[in-house]
Image 1 (spheres, one colour):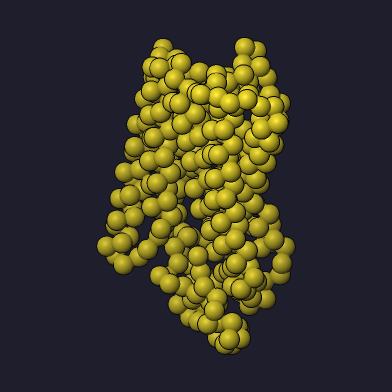
Image 2: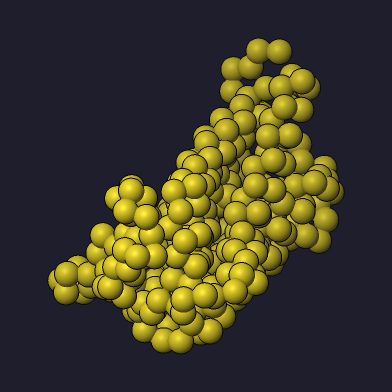
Length: 305
């Protein structure tokens, strides 16, 4: 059935339609918090760059904070214009997709921990490419979700809506797995015996690094799994369940994410997870390249993230 404009949503969404009296004060608080997070992580990035140290994850966290500020701004505009479906679409997309940056950061941290303790596995060409292909697949899923989410607002065709729903469920599940993936990677690191010792990088004990990553991945998985779970149990727009409440929306999205942003600034992940610039191959994290541990032909083609 052809359409000439967006249709109002027929299913309840997480957080519902924002209102001026309730949502604007909460949005204002989170905007201040994420502005502080953006300034802090950008400052950390610039300080490290002046010292000749690249820690691009600080820049990625800055980008995430800016994406969250944009999402909050769109939700603020939506609360002022509650019937504007275009604002609703943009606000929901920014809320759903921004957190992917934190998932990628945690995966990079997990990769560094594995490379430090199991260099033959961590620096293997197949293992490195697996990460690169997985990151590329995340971008592909984002494109699919954006396309299907927008399309679902502009059609009443049940077949197309069914395809869009399946794509949405796949995307939500895929991102929940991405949030959780650092935890099994850490379990893999612990399960495989360490033969040649652990290569030291950054500051702090490895146990602390692991605890930080497991905690951050755990609470991000909680948020992602919650969002995926409610996607599997839709409710009519006029009969939302408790899990569609505004409290759940702000807790399982912005609160959890702010905790990670603040945690990474307070404990200085830039100092704990930093590796030498252009590090590649076994021994490069500590500045001692142990070529005897790796065939010369493979040592030339393996590279870091």
